Image (cartoon, rainbow, N blue to C red):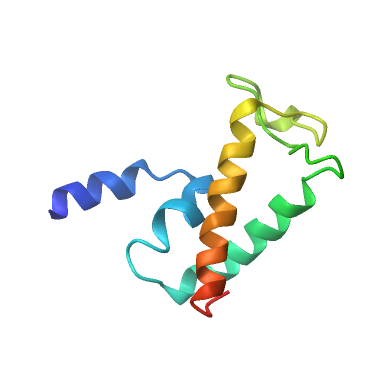
Length: 94
């Protein structure tokens, strides 16, 4: 079991923090500032028409990503993170 957990934790990418780590393993208050900062940043990347910006194209240089760039997978990541934020709100954590 510990080997599986270690492999899982090593597979986590920065954008997965809210979606993968917090609700499943219990909640660590040390992560809350990063979660709040990340969520605020994500919300500001949504255009009035619902387009999610700042989505890095596959294989692109992250330094050149702009607010008008989007990819089909960006919305899914945004919705998954939003679902986990809602769970944290329901638990009174966020």
